[in-house]
Image (cartoon, rainbow, N blue to C red; front, side):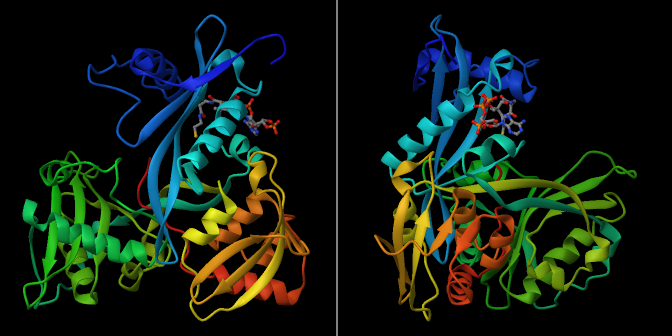
Length: 399
Ligand SMILES: CC(C)(COP(=O)(O)OP(=O)(O)OC[C@H]1O[C@@H](n2cnc3c(N)ncnc32)[C@H](O)[C@@H]1OP(=O)(O)O)[C@@H](O)C(=O)NCCC(=O)NCCS
């Protein structure tokens, strides 16, 4: 970047066309006109832009204000999206420049972790994010679902606007028990019940014998009724086995006109108790990455195993978020955790190692083999493993 002066600032209303042009070219929708009401800046989103001395927008990145569930608590996150550098200037440090600034500013507004869906891992790994999970759609022959028997005591009906809060609570109950699931509230989730209903061809609720809603499915019916006919199911959540079974059986009812069902599922979803993995082929997988923005803040924000008490001395390396760097003592007690400054720095973690460990995406032994964790012994490995061993990281919101 020698010889050229770049300026980074938040985009304002006057910059929206530049943001559209850079983003649409990078992500391949430049053939479409910019919608009149389009804006990169929306509630819960702000865009950092790098400008050259001629005032041209040459790189950008969006910071989304969101929360994600870890250990039963919502952790404030910066969801990074819309990252692009002008074609002629890629590989010259502008991506690093804008993302480093975004991380600093995200920390200032209270984000303690950052997540993103990577179309390319290299630039984010260079800055300390690590892949911890993937959002996967499985293609299932719909006739396989037609073999599942609905429960006689469970009824199905289309959701109404009045059901939307209950549907939200059912999702939250599952998200709270997961690792990394999105909290679907906050500034980026401002849709009204009517808009949520309009988003899908079907939002079906499962009702038990007492009249309580115990599950739901959100689905879209694609075009055609020949071989190409398909259903896409973004959420299928049963709080009871009967609800899960009955919702799957409903999907099976489409077998004659939609031979394929694409369904978004986590690795350990209860749907797998009714579906053989051999019948479901991964159709698309969108990996997602995690980074700790503020290590002490991230440790304090998440929940930890209530029955685990212990301490480990850590030494964190982090040249992108230097405030994380150095020796910290991890103290876990009664379901809470804290990072205190100091200690002997016994276990050394890189930013990618810290992210993997925090999400429970890899065990300390695996991190050791990847070169992300050094030092310590079997005892520190065991404590660190137990601290974040939990549900496989799962995220069912693309952004
Ligand atoms: C991805 C993109 C934003 C990166 O921006 P950039 O300005 O080229 O990135 P930088 O030059 O600042 O590189 C940042 C780091 O990533 C590394 N990097 C960049 N491209 C890489 C690649 N393809 N593979 C591996 N590493 C890569 C660089 O080596 C650098 O690391 P270093 O500073 O430790 O040497 C840019 O290539 C782009 O606009 N691509 C098209 C759109 C896109 O894919 N966006 C990402 C959506 S998730």
